[in-house]
View 1: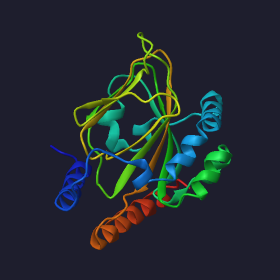
View 2: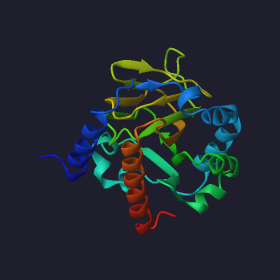
View 3: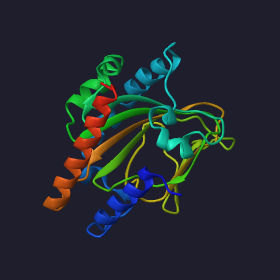
View 4: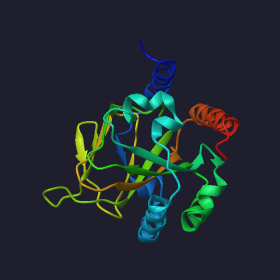
Length: 227
């Protein structure tokens, strides 16, 4: 039986799917030009992320933050750890202080409502799944990408039937409501910066719905003590 999370996600997706017809990958310069600032600073952002990984602080697994995501996070005994900096508008101030440059860039980018450093363990596989709703887009900037056995970027994003291998400093703006899965086919941890950003140029009613949904999720995050 589907979970309440999946049932509600499916209902919300239907509302957006009936009104929006855009591809899985979108143009960064048109839809999220601020992403180029993060891309230009990727080496410094990598240093901040590597310091987080090497610190003694425990970074939670995704399903420890969101138990409803255990089906994609706790599947193979390998870790998918998430260092949260911003959750649907709610800032995690202590974490932002540990990443000063990233925090500065986020402060200049109000359209980025969530920000996470994603640490994918060697040979971790995130099974095929879909995101909840199309009011936001996923900006991904790969910071540390170990090679696979053939010398290619070991982290692979399969999105709507197409394979994407982003190297270090490369970014992608994509719609995570399309089916996707991820592999780390390397011997080291892959580090990526993930931002959730408002989708531009939506009809007014969908903009209002998106703001309402994200405000509600942000309130839940605040009540759970994330900031």
